[in-house]
Image 1 (cartoon, rainbow, N blue to C red):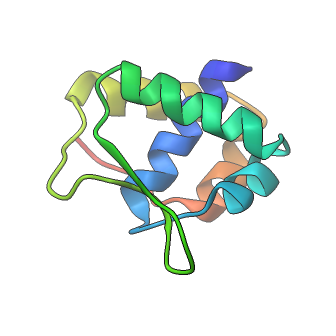
Image 2: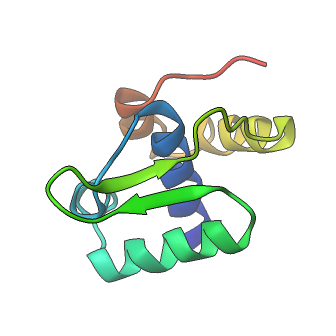
Length: 97
């Protein structure tokens, strides 16, 4: 589902300094174009995402960004009830509120 993937992308961006679109596409088993659309949607939702092209490029979240508490709680609740939980938790640390 699209929202599942977008929450997963946001979680990865919050945990890692920079990721690439091909990396995200492989992790979520979708095309790079789908990742680009998801990143655009996250930007429209007010998430301060920065993209850089080139050899050292990638996708990241603006420094010092803290997600709203509601988003963190929704993220954990969603992934703790699904089959994707095991895969998701291998790649990302669990937040505590």
